[in-house]
Length: 194
View 1 (cartoon, rainbow, N blue to C red):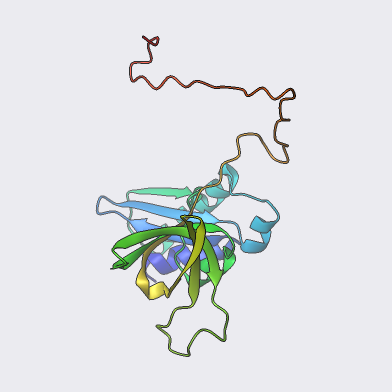
View 2 (tube, rainbow, N blue to C red):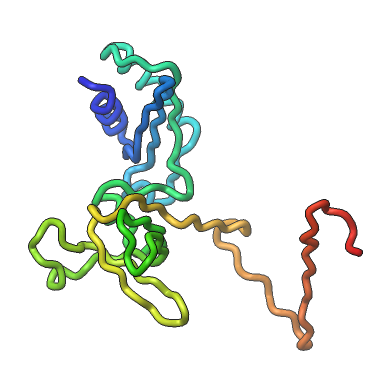
């Protein structure tokens, strides 16, 4: 068994989704894991205990399978999770993603928008035909970019960060028509304004 098969079998056997694994020439083996879609939908996220559990099991399996490595890192894929396989795209339909195409389309390779699945009636039977759609909101009008996975070099979720916490409500508007002005000091040295 090669190291990729050993990693995939171990991670999925422990009940996690293998997002990606990579190996550097210096012997570093990086493994990115995530919750299975049904658990992630319930709000369960990867934590340190999950990473430790997978690390311990991988160390054992890689030793038994005689797969050489110098250092092993197991982590979550992060807020900008990469989309690698069709199941990843299907899981994140309706989410904002950023894709980089292999070949430029209309003079550019990078696009950001809402991921959608093409309706079955619109997709031809050809395997290389577009299956996915990116709804791009630029300049006040929505545009659609249809693509197949073979046309994508890289795709990632656009991070959504909420610093107010879960379930928080926006701050109430000020009464009396006054506007709050916030001034941000953008000087490089951080010193006082002149």
